[in-house]
Length: 119
Ligand SMILES: [Zn+2]
Image (cartoon, rainbow, N blue to C red; front, top):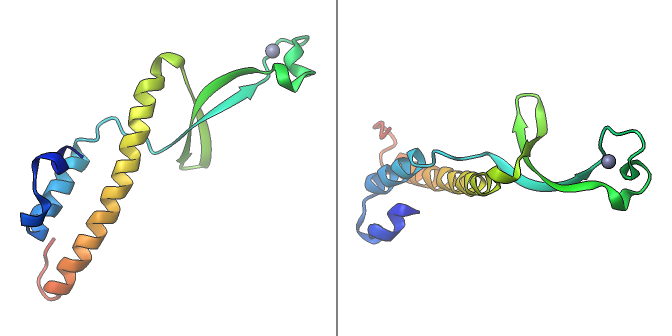
């Protein structure tokens, strides 16, 4: 997104656009691949009301829902880390958009010069 504000895309070649997207991709240092979910849960105290009254469960607590090697999992996010996690998720969304844009650009480049490697 940084690059959109300081570069005029209309005057950029496909290669320049691709370079800008790759540079932006490298800037997404805090990215988190997943989404934030809020959850209510029960605790380990045996006689706590949270076990009998679902309306009295603890929370909401924030979790990052992400896909690891073993599938979907939810990772607890402490309140102090919530803002950073939200920024990371936003960067993850941007990364996936960049991947789509790069795919479109690379398809165009492949069609322009199918025999030459443009990579
Ligand atoms: Zn409880």
